[in-house]
Image (cartoon, rainbow, N blue to C red; front, side, top):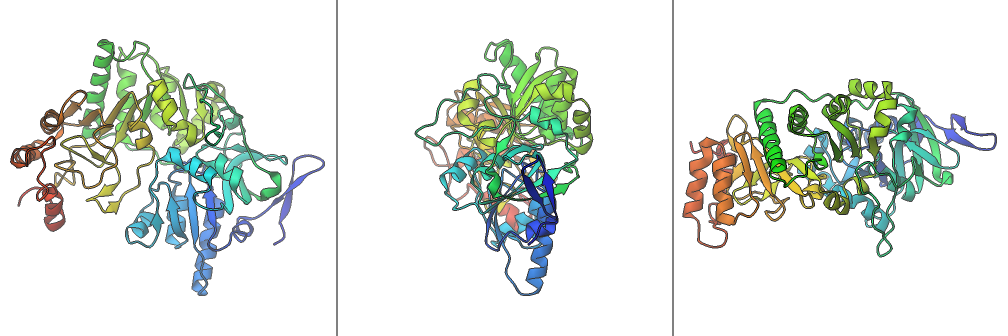
Length: 503
C-alpha cells in the first residue's frame, strides 16, 4: 500500500508516513504483535483503534482477523478494551485490566498467560513466544538511523523493537520531547553472558536515552497528538486511609528500632488508592526523611511528594499520571527530568536490583489466608481479575514485603482473610507483613500457629474472627492445621448464597 507522505530527518533519508488505517492494513491475521504501553502510559493509540475497525469490517464480511498480543503490562482502554470489543485478541500476555478482555478470558474466548512482568523481556529475547511479527510503539521522535525516543513508558518496548520483523512508530506530538532526559534504555545480555547490573542507587543510569531499531524494519510512521488518558484516582476511603496509617506507623517504628536505616530505604508501591494513602502518610510524617522510590509505576501522589521535597527521586517504568498532572510535569521539566528515571521493566522489576537496594514493597491482594498465603489474581480461584503483574517480582525479593487489602468486600459479604486462599500467587515464605484496616500483622519469625492467630486477631474483620478461629481449632493437627473438607467453606457459601457469612 503506498504511503500517504514522507517524514524527512536529513538530506539523505526519509521514513514513510502512514495513516493509522494504512498502518493497520500491514498487520496480517494471526500475527504476534507487541504494543508499547505500561498501563495506558506510552500506549500506542491510533493504530489499535484502526485495527479494531478493520477487524469489524473483516468479521462482517465473514473473514477471520485475530491477533496474539503482547504489551509491557496492561495497556489501557485503547488497546485491551478496544481490541477485545472487536474480538481481535486471541492470546494475551503478561497482564491486563480491561473489562471486555477480562470477560473474554474468563469465558475461554481468549488465551491468557499470566506472568511476572520482569520475565517478559527475557521470554521475548529467548523466542519462547515465537517470532514477533510487528511492533507498534509510541514515541516522541524517531530518527532515520533507528533511534526511537519513547514517550511516557519504557516497559518491554525496547525488546519489541529489537525483535519485531516490522515496526510501526506512532509519533505523538502531545508529549514533551524532553522525555528522553528521563529514559535509561538497556537490554541485558542473555545468560550465561549476563553481567551484574550497575544500578547501585535508584537513580543510577546505565543505558541510552533512546531505544534502537534497524531502520530498514520501520515500515511507517503514524502522526498523533493525544494524551495518555490516565484518569486521576479517587480519594482514598476510610479503609485505605487506615491501612496507610498502619503502614506508616510500622515503618517509623522499624526505623526507630534500627531495622530501617535513618536515611530510609527505597520504596515500591503498586497502583491504586491504598498506595496513594501510604505515600501521603509518609509525606506528612515528620520522622520520615526524604526518600527515593524504585518502583514500576509512578502516580500523581508521588509527583506531589516530589514537588514538596519529600520524594527525592524515583526510578520507574511508567509515568502513570493523570493528564492534568502530566501537563504540570511537562511545564517544569527542568525540575522533574533529573529526578525521574524511566527504565525497561526488565530493570525496573529486576529481582537482583530489588534485593540489593533493599526495597520496601507495598502491594495489594484480593485475599490472604490464615498462614500468610496471598491471592492477587483470581476470584474464588477461577475468575481472573487482572493478573499478577509486578507484585511477585517485588514481594519475593524485597527487604520488607507488605501486602494489603481491606478486611471485607461487598459490604461485608466477602472476607479477604480466609482459611485457605483459592489461588496462590504469593506463598507464606515470601510474605512478611499483612495489613488491613483492622491492623497490621508482622509475621517475621512466627511459626504457622502463631501466624494464624496473629492474622485472625489483627487483620480479619470482627464478623469473621470466630469463624476463622473455629476452623483453626477444628482442623487436623500438623505443622499446618487444615481441614481439606472445610478449607473452602467460605468460598462455597459465597457462590451458593452470595455471602461468606452463615445465613
